[in-house]
Length: 275
Image (tube, rainbow, N blue to C red):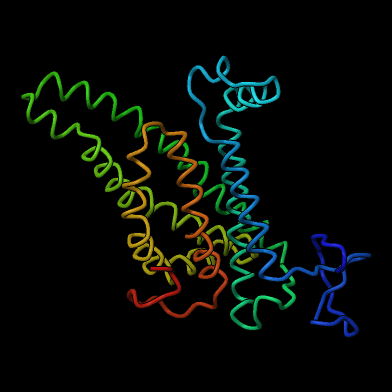
């Protein structure tokens, strides 16, 4: 097998088997099967590394190396969560390209990845989803604590227990996220993808108008149950980790939609979104 190196400016060559592309001295020789395995390992390892530690983790972690890693994780909470999200975003676009090759030519075919597309999709998801969701989850986490305290002061005990039950809080957060957050992030992702492809503001707005409704409805189907699980978790850091993993799947769909030739704006119909 040839050396696996990213190719910023791939040029087609006629003498390479499988339609490979030459990039200086290296050739991208990935297959969908290898991409599936590699991304699964990378995301699993990154997720294990950023899982929030308990408040006494520094004292309880056995071994100097593990204790040092835990301390580093606790001291760089925001950076660790954003790095995890960026990795999941990149994996989503790589997987979307691999699925396209797999569907057309099989799992053992050569997959010539478009690394410019990967970088563009990663940046779009980071700006439109990862950073905003980190702030959104933290806002909801802090607001829910204030809400619980206020409800217990002014409401009757039975009503307060019902409205401040973890299931009730999770459902409220999920509803707010679908109405407010998902609407904003879908517009931002589609617009950024079109703009970064060189289309300008007019092209970005046309992309949003043509694809927003379908993306939003598919997001409603995908995230309704997902958000109930995410917001049932006790701390926003864990919520962000789980959301990053779930968003990896949905971002595969978003990458597919954003790179698909658009038609006129139409109501929602069956789409690529996994059910």
